[in-house]
Image (cartoon, rainbow, N blue to C red; front, side):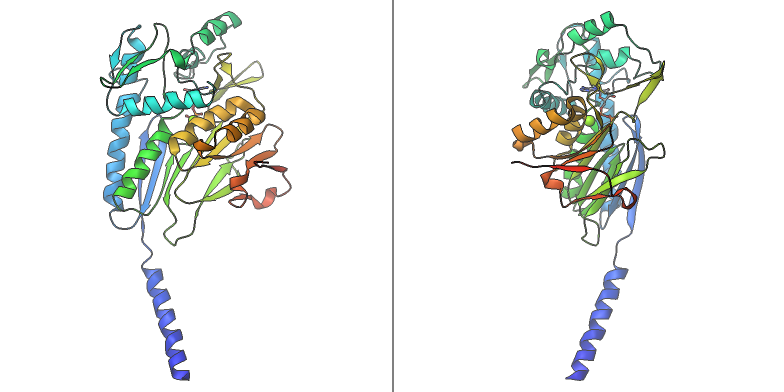
Length: 346
Ligand code: ADP
Ligand code: MG
């Protein structure tokens, strides 16, 4: 009897050790695409090939939707002056998804804001503050509902003078496509960091959830103020601190309010969206930054089908999280006295 028990203990230890030594090594790939550094990490059989394929996909997608490459679909659209343009198989479904999300957000996300983005110099780094008259003209030309699409021929028509940019949704879309591709390749554990967009695949190799940090918008050093524990989810943050310039003591950032064509000032310092669909998360991170705390809450209540939760860090440092994240959300240890409000369905 006792011998059996000793043997059982011995066997358990042996199995545990075997388990440890079988922990797969990560495969990692650094990619520069879509104007940002990306780090792709995956574990297990097939991970190396899957990440090589992922890099290939990112290049193809970037070539299709870049606003700076002269032969991309987006450049063709932005130069067409009102004529229809046939776009590639890569661009068309992304564009449709983006337009649909523009509608869901009541135009807080508007992919036709590009002329304004350009006027502020956010594409070139030659920053300037357009005067009120110019802003009024730019705002009048932002209207996603004026974009015409024809599905059979994959044809898109922009009104003359309007310009489009998929930058607010492209990395989320890329994450979602790669999630599907990696799953198909049999990868059950991966984390993709696509410049502020995190896409997780499955869980950590030991089966525990991924912990994704949320940056403190007020920290110069990029310190994290909290984390969320997730499996198979995207975690996407938009913040004014990501790209901005200062002039005469005023900070101007790259997320614009489509109503004014000027940087959105809603009292939100950063918006993080957590959900199963990367495209939705990316679109909503931009939109919630524009909408502010009240608008965010309204959108969350009105659109359960979008299947998302959020963490808003407000400019006064307080935090709003939605109910679905209550158990997944942890404040950083040195930050535990921060005010956190949980938004619930009641
Ligand atoms: P990032 O791409 O820096 O992670 P976002 O996903 O929030 O951040 O996208 C911001 C980019 O989208 C801007 O750089 C600009 O090109 C474009 N943009 C800015 N404001 C809007 C808006 N209200 N709707 C759609 N696109 C926007
Ligand atoms: Mg976004």
